Length: 320
Image (tube, rainbow, N blue to C red; front, side, top):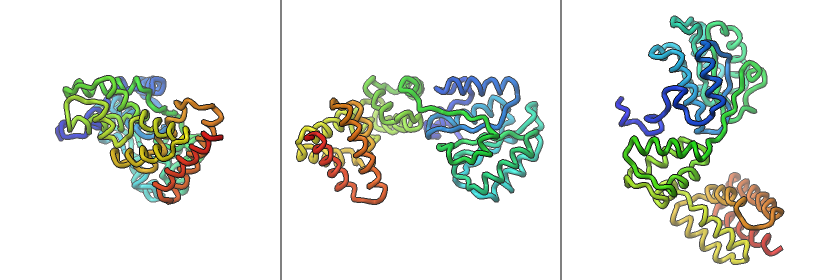
């Protein structure tokens, strides 16, 4: 397939560890394993979109070069999560010997925290039995869902959300390749929308590029269905200042203009709390209220009623 037809998240995925953006210490360790042609089983933990899969595929390419096809087994554990997959496909691949210059094959289990406990217990024995010819890389969002016996058999690497400067670097790289003009405010908007998730950042840029080669702040927020931080802050300030009806109108305007869901609005309110010019004690109380109403939405409550109730709570805090 021509790369021009790929989504940009795949088209611009780093092909080598030297091209990976961010996670410097982890990448440095992985490069050392490549040079030594030896490595432990590894567990990559961290939120989505920060380079766990990219680092694994880059490591495999650096290790095997053109022979990656027969030496890497990539599985998504959220699709194939039962004990049968461990006893079948994984075990069959693990017992085969690498015929290349690297003395082991590589099995990559993406979203390993979706594996059932029984599957994880079967996996720990498989990791031991075939350690001479196979290495495992497990990727997960929540390492607490990986049983201790599996964790103890792995070197654990914590992947951190990407810094804004690292997101800017990738945006500039993609924009140059695609012939786009991205102004400074638009870069800041993409970084805000992504929240340290490079996939979100690149998808936001590609979505905006469909409409124009000149990427602006307005276009980014419109494509990403996110309100500007300033608009959220103004709404919260209005509620805190006792102007509930004004805050309610701003809420309805944001919902209509950007198509925001209740969860989106609560998340943006949460992100703006730290920037509010209110006493620290009130910020703590506000975080507590945001958590309570987020739980109500998760439980299935009406989002419009709950967000308006949150604004009413913010107004009461301002009156204390």
